[in-house]
Amino acid sequence: MSQNKQPRQITVAEMAPHIHSFAPGENKVNKISSWLISWIETSLKNGNIKPYDLLPSKGDLAFHTGVSKGTIQNVFRDVEDYGLLESKQKIGTYINPETKKNMINKLTSKREFAAETIKKYLYENEFKTGDYLISIRKLSNLTGISAATIRGAIGTLLNAGIIRKENNAFIITRMDFAIGNVTVKTLVEKIAEKMKLYIANNYQTGEKLLSNQEWAAKFNVSIKTVHDALKLLSKEGILYTRRGRYGTIVVNNINKNMQYDYEKIEIKLENYIMKNCQIGSRLPSIAELAKQYKVSAKTVKKALDNLSEEGYVTFSRGRRGGTFVTDIPRENDGYKWLAINRDYIIEN
Image (cartoon, rainbow, N blue to C red; front, side, top):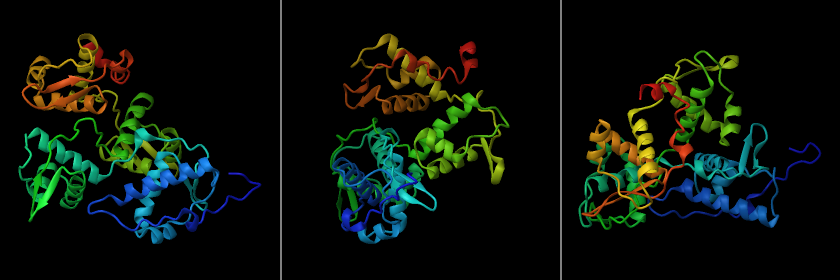
């Protein structure tokens, strides 16, 4: 930040953030984040604001948008991860001078995750238009997602026209929704995976990791996101975090056990697609692939789900349905994990 010139304080009045109405089940964070991203991009383009300009306080924005201060905190975090904002203690939240968009890492809320999980459940269990949706309690038990989050996801499905409410029940109105190509991992989970791979390639047991600030700069996300990702890896037993100068230490060498069965099958399927398929080709059934690779159908399904999220395959229902190739992996992509576990090359 310039030492010769003080940053300008953006006022609530010039932002006009009067967003008081939200549809039932609508995600407030997503709605306000979308508005704020649009406002910042337009204002930068028009020259109304400049890099380093300070945003109003969270409390002021919360009051004028009719939401809680915690909601605005999540909005700032979302837009910071998008690349338009940066926050520093004792300074505040200001316009990022680099303004690099980080669309790949766009946050997926718990509600969106639950909505996609319900859609996958409907698809995999061959529900049809006109069928009644099972109860919120049953959905919660089946998916392991809290009932409160499931209720929010129901609102999302209502808004999308996938279900409708009749008396005290919900009825499926259409089954032509997209499935398979939507990433349902949260930003924290994505960053945790990236950190895990980086640690596997660059650290040994007992070594001290980068600081949270350095991780945040490396992956272009907020420090809070890095903090939450480190907590996930700590729960897996990979890291041990101590306060002060000790920092975060690698306590489990993950290089040798980095690949799960479904990840190995995912790589084999990528190689199969590269060597044998064209765009539009139909893959063998899950049962056939499970038999061919000597793994469970569940493992194959998980691998295919990952390939679908990466845009390589898509699923279609019906008599002529199946799994179809939508893109061909590049040669380097097909072997991207071999640097992590070279033992597997020797064994296989």
